[in-house]
Length: 391
Ligand code: LRH
Ligand code: MN
Ligand code: MN
Image 1 (cartoon, rainbow, N blue to C red):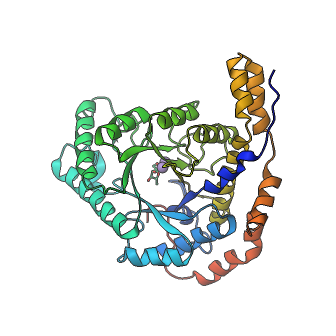
Image 2: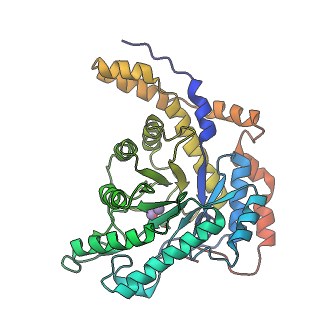
Image 3: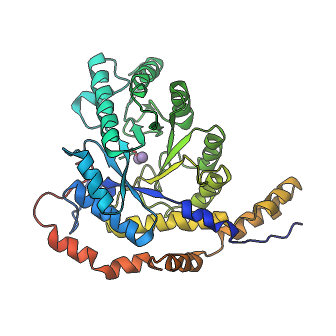
């Protein structure tokens, strides 16, 4: 039996951890039953960015903010970029939205009507133009396209039209830009979704070329799916472009990452590290895609990035030499024990020390509560319309 010698030698990789925040996490969200308002909720994109920058100031983990178009449409994106930079963050991924217009009732990039497909393509071209102005690298495409009843649509014809539409969009992706295609197994389509799984996304992006990759949203899988396997496979194939982190108990809940299943997050981060996804030259982009329906939004985002950091730190503790030796010796329980030893280690004191050494608050949740920021935005952000998921 190989001795298990856990060390923090690899902890320097934690310095490479950067988690992009979604602008829409700071707006009000809810279910089809009710959207609750919260004092201090942003009314403008700038206010969303200011909240995201607060999360970054307290954690040092969230240097960029993703925008969703048209929710975050502004007249001057270069000015928005300067505003973000003044706050200490950058503008990141541009997310397209072809799921809220009446014309898209029967699909967008897959629609049988060429004029609807063209409208959806043109929307993506607008997003690429915005990327030029914000300096964003990634165009993230998630499609609500799909059907509700067997026979409603021609499954194969829809794939063909999707391929053609994506190829048109891809022609406009710049040398330093990427197209990432997100999959989701169901919802809003209930019978058949046009990009339901990593295999479909992989097939579509592979046909496009080098600058197209898969986006893995952790909430978009059937219960019981082995997500870390997908992570390992996509990294192996060089096609894991980005993550949308969140967690789910049932369907696409968009709950705080690591809240539902911290062990799953640990296993995912272990595969990310194993596949080089945390190396300095990694091209895997980590992002949250969450909503905070009943909890406070800024602490919700702080908790989320800390959860990713904690599970990453635990994954870095795995004694990989001992693990490989146990695996190769057929030592099933020994290998499992090495893995679990790392998972069960409480890294919070070590991370608090690291933060303090870097001039960050040792306890960012507490620092936020004591900062007075929540009270100040509640006092100042009166009047106007609070932003919400979808606006
Ligand atoms: C779809 C999704 C996708 C959207 C976001 C708001 O469920 O995960 O990433 O852009 O939610
Ligand atoms: Mn998503
Ligand atoms: Mn989702």
